[in-house]
Length: 330
Image 1 (cartoon, rainbow, N blue to C red):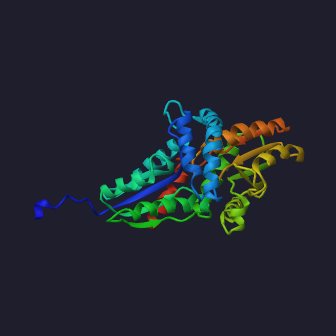
Image 2: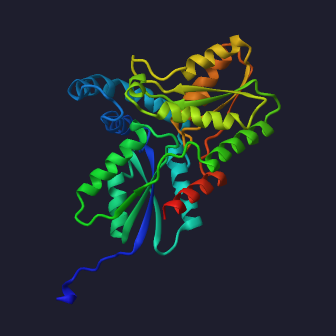
Image 3: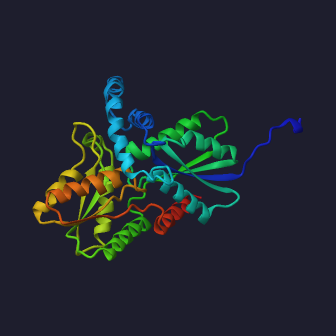
């Protein structure tokens, strides 16, 4: 009987970094597939699901992939043949593994939408012998449409498993001292490299519909908390908070980043830096929407100097933050 027992791996802990996701390529069909999964998430789009699926499949998924593909082509890493978000998430995973990985501690990554899926990576970790699972959603500021939907998918996967690993989810870290230090250091580094003085630093976060905030989503408050803690380190430079990437006709969190960039030169703020603290990796929203479209809009409106502060990506400060968060959960 003993010889008939299947071999079982056990005794390990898995740490799973989870980012938003990315299409597999810039092709129309890959973009469409990615958008369909993303925009079908009821945490992201909180409207009547029957009506929304009609709108999504008849209109949005036939029209939007071409526009989105164009944006991805602007920032696609040709040599690596992947988006920056995937590249930096892979690098974050490798560097964290180098710092804390052991025979019994595995570090991997997954995407909420697209590949590699949360389902595939949880099963991979379980098959590798991970009896304990620690999940790190790569969203500093909690929102239902980001952190919560990651948790939803993790729970769905575990619901289908007979032998579940124990689970711990690392919470939001919008005010973690190492996170704030990393952002402050990235700003100081950029200032040291430019030959002009910024009139203002614009902190742009991904927006959410205002009705989500009205329903009790704390995201807006967490964004402002991060900005306040950064501002405390820069007494001589004004820092303002705005929200980008709105979708559809309804009101989103204000002020809007694009409208603010258009108005700043008229207010005498013609030399600005932009930072996107809510994005753990540079992506289409930072590199195309802000660095290309936002810059063009600002300069056309009379701006003189515009520069973008890179996301924390795979910087040493960022990996040190992940190390602290992971070790605290172990």
